[in-house]
Amino acid sequence: MRPERRRRDPPTYTEPVPDSPAPAVQIDGLVMRYGDKVAVDGLSLAVGRQTITAVLGPNGAGKTTTLETCEGYRKPQQGRVRVLGLDPQRRRRDLLPRIGVMLQDGGAWSGVRAMEMLRHIARLHAHPLDVDLLGERLGLGDCGRTPYRRLSGGQQQRLKLAMAVVGRPELIFVDEPTAGMDPAARRTTWGLLQEMRNDGVTVVLTTHHMDEAERLADQIHIIDRGRMIASGTPLELTRGGTSTIRLVVTKPFPPGAPELLQESLGHRLDVRTISEVSLLITGPADSTTLATVSAWCERHGVLPESLHLGQRNLEDVFLELTGRELTGRELAGRELTGRELAT
Amino acid sequence: MSTPTGAFTPNPGAAPLSRQVLAQAAMESKLMLRNGEQLLLAVVIPVIVLIGGVQGAQHLGISFSRRPVDVFAPGVLALAVMSTAFASLAIATGFERRYGVIKRLGSSPLPRSGLLLGKVGALLLVEALQILVISLVALAMGWEPHPSLLAALLSILLGTAAFASLGLFVAGVLRAEATLAAANLVYLLLLAGGAVVLPSSAYGAFGELTRLLPSGALGDALRHAFWSGGFQWGSLLVLLVWAMLGAALTARTFKWE
Image (cartoon, rainbow over all chains, first blue to last red):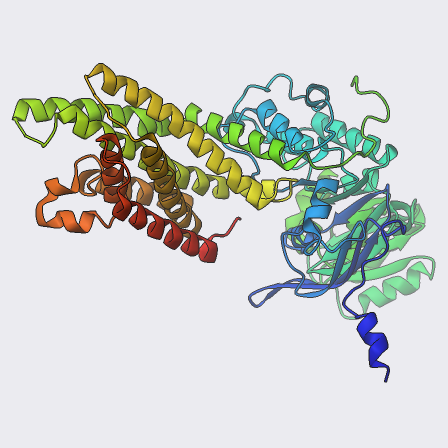
């Protein structure tokens, strides 16, 4: 109708003015495919500045693809991605100096010494951190002259984290930062990421450890098969303090039995069938609840193989939403017994 | 745990491009010189070829138009350029792709042009060291060069461009191990039959063909330059064509990750 207006304001040009408080990351309807396989399936999410955001999901959920699209490695096939208000494809050169990246695989020459690699990345930046202090902080002092190929998995991870941090970025993307780290190094890493957040850095990390997401993140996005299935603070997602009972039995429930259990437990507890041999009860559980469940098992002739009472955690959230364990296993009878009994 | 509070307060920015390129060139040349196999290819083999060739020619009574050392020295310089610009560069780049180094640098402030310039800088630095060592050995063996320095320099630069673009092409289309095998194989084939160390006139009828190979062209151009002949325009043109062909192929096929 008004072509002259359209010409002046083309719909493709959507860069916000530099000073506007654009979210650190804004993804709208991202779709990424590899051949026939859909890796990211219409994902939308926003990351607020100066927060720690965890993207949580099982292997193959699309976490790395999403991150690599934000880092400008991959062009969105559909949808729109903005990082610090910039298009990571078109404004790559403006964006890259402002972000720090920790890749999941590789990233250093096999013969380069640990601190030499860190010093090299520092030299590419205008105002890098003190390389020696950072190395010491991340426990690289002892292996500073060791070639990359001879570092342990945990040392390689710490070096890669240091490389992501050394340029004093506004925003860091860290892909599985604590994979292969021992518990002490994990705690050091968590401490470092929290300190960075407190100093004004936005942290986006992927993990498939729910405890990592729960302890560290301000905001958690759970993705599965390329889709967002839940989003919120750790407290919101777990409805903090809610109890859960996981029941696994030796043979399939008789038809209608779960519904009868729901009736006997009343409306304050929620019974959700996970598979034909397992179910999840969520709500304020007490000894009466356990007795009711036992009585119900007896009445229906099913034998509990494991009965696990705990606080509702992200693992339960994932299980409720997908019927699968976060580690990617289907929840079914015998597989889980040992672990459940041990818990 | 001694980092003071506020240590991570963002202050991002890229270093000036010149500083980034220098850092990259220094890093790559350091790694190249530290790697034993690469050093073997870069210095040890050329020096062995020089000594072996001169000794062999004397013992076997093979006659050239000039003294053997005057024939072999420029040819071995050409071989050194070929080993670094082609074989070393291809192998190093192949493994950089494999180990995700190029990918990681791809999200650093260093632009791809800077990475390429850094590689060129590292090549030229390593070549300068090679030329120094080989020339000293050759002079000790009685080499009497009558160089046209400008012609020698242009030959080396064009030869580097031709071999480096072909090396990057190989590294871009093959996996790291295949690059290692292919680069070494091509290097050996050209060393034996590519008229790099021996003049193309030594290859009989096949010699005409070797003049069109980058190895033969670089060898002939350098021999000409060191025999006070000045510019061997035909050979330089052949090198230029190979450089353009290699650059075009690389630009079409090279994948940074």
